[in-house]
Length: 112
Image (spheres, rainbow, N blue to C red):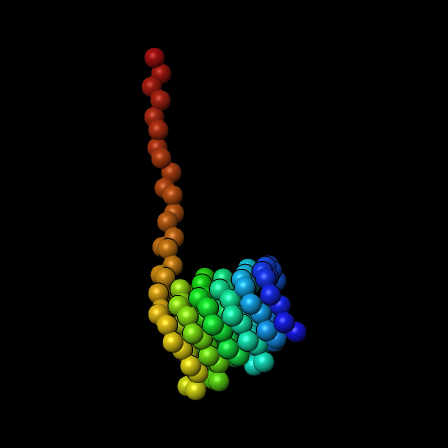
């Protein structure tokens, strides 16, 4: 199968064919061993077993598995690259924003 265009999903998505364009997932995106993606990718989590040419923004985690390849720039919080994987590009590690808890503000009213 060959898809040219945009793919947007909130569910887990597995690509095991050819895709050109843009791929977005609010969940886990897996590029299978037969997957050949020439697209910019944005997803919560990305796992690559096939080949990707394009930039990736993985909000939580990116993993390039054995025999997987990526040519492009990465923005992610966590990355793992297995032995036997190929990567060419730059990596920008985004640290998660510290959680700030709001403190209640005390107010005093004067009767008068």
